Amino acid sequence: MADTRRAPSLRSVPVAVRISPKQMSREDYDRMIHELEASGLSEPEGRLYHAAYGEDQVEMFEVWRSQEEFEAHRDRTFAVLQGTDVSTFDVRPLHSEHPD
Image (cartoon, rainbow, N blue to C red):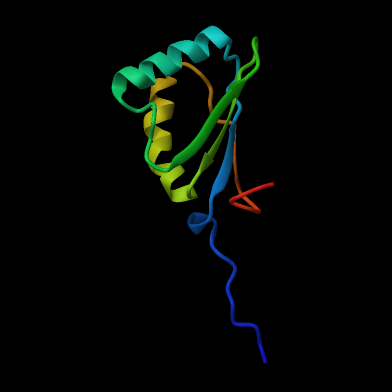
């Protein structure tokens, strides 16, 4: 008997997103967070986790419920980052929603 189960699409599973802007200092990151908070975009629907790391070169890591929810918020967030090259980001499906 053939296996008729389909693998879930990337759009229906939680995704990890790594954002690696070129030349973003911690001060740049703090400014961006302030602007996102002022615009009401700092806690978007669908984002489960956000972290930033690095001093001279800040990168961000996020977990979203789905790629679709990330994409719905991506353009608004990247608009706040005007002048910062955020063309480097990576979206990957999570293997487990509840890692041990």
